[in-house]
Amino acid sequence: MKKMYVKRTKVYQCKDCRVKIAISDIEGMFWGFLSDCLSNIELSKINENSNSLLGKKQALLEETKSEKATLETKINRCTEMRMDGEITKENFTANFYLLKTQLANLEELLKNLRSEMDSEMHQIALGKDLFNEIQLLVYNWTDMAFARKRSIIETVTKEILVSKNDIIIEFSINLQKLLGDRKFQHNSPLVLPSLLFKLEFRKPIHQNYPQNPTTIGEHLRKKRIDSDLSQAELAKILGVSTDCLTYWENNRSSPQITYYPRIHHFLGFYTTTFNETKFCDLLRSYRWKDGFSFRALGSLLKVDATTVRAWEKGLSLPSRKMNEKLVAVFGDSFSKIKY
Figure 1 (cartoon, rainbow, N blue to C red):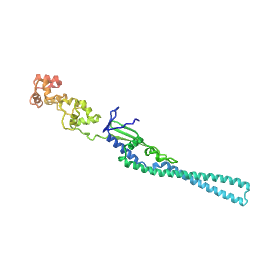
Figure 2 (figure 1 turned 30 degrees about the vertical axis):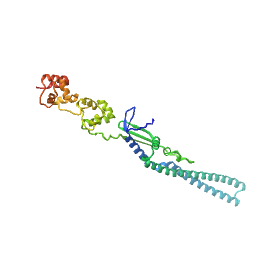
Figure 3 (figure 1 turned 45 degrees about the vertical axis):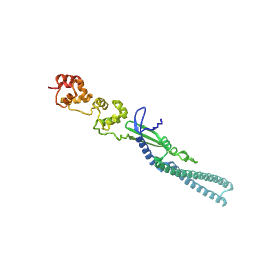
C-alpha cells in the first residue's frame, strides 16, 4: 500500500481517480474510529494468553505437588520397611535410589513451573500497565506531537479506501509496535495478538450541500458536489469566473440567460418549465432554453427588444412573415400559431 501525505490543503484529491474528501472529515472519522477501537480493548483480551497459560501451569503445579507428596510417602514407607527388616538391603537400595531420582525430577519440574508462573504473572502485570498506557494514548491524542501521531497512524493503518460515497477504514493494531518494543524487553516477552478492526462510513455531506435545491444556484452547487468538481473546475466548464459561480451558488446573483444552455446541459434538465400551449409562454420557453436575451433575439429577427418583450407579455402577436422567422429559429412548434 502506498503511503500518501497531505500538506497545506483542506481537501485531498486522488490524482488517479479524482475522488476528493475534506481533510477535516477523514481526520475526524479516522481518529473517532481509532479512539473507539483503542478504548474498547479489554484488559482480559490483552492478558488472554497469559491467563490461559497461567491456569494450565497452576493445574500442572497442583498435580505435580500431589505426585511429590505420594512419592515422599513411598520413600518413607520404604525406609520403615528396611528398618523393620521387611526388605533386604539390596531391594531397599534399588527401590530407594529409583524413588529419590523420581523425587528429584519432580522437584526440578516444580521449580521450573514456579519460575514460569512468575513470568506469566509478570506478563499479566505488564498487561495492566499496557492497558493503562493505551487509555493514556487516547487521552493525550489531541496534544500529541505530530511525529508521534504519524508513527501511530502508519503502525495501525492497514487500509483506507475512499470512494465517491463511502469510506472504509481498516486497522491492524499490534500493541507491541504501537507502544514500542522497549516496553516488552524482558526474559519472556509478552506476546499479544494483532487486533483487526474494519468499518465502513458514509461520506459526510458537505455543510453547504443543498438537499432540496430550489434556485438555479442551489441546483448548480448540488450537481457540482455530486460530481466531485471544484468551483474552479465547474466555472471553466460554464465559461465564467470562479467568483461569478460563487455568487450564483450563494444566490447573490442569477446567471445571465446566455449561460442557460450550458447550465442546463451540465445539470441534465431544465430548471424552469413553461406552459407551452400559449404563444407567449412558448416563446419564453424556447428563449430560455436557447439562451436568447430580448435584445439578442430581437437582433436575430430584425426587431427591437421591446417588441419581443411585448410578445412574451401577450400584448401582441408576430406577423405571419415574422412567424416564419421564428419557425426557422426555434422549429415547427411556432407554425401552430392561429391568428
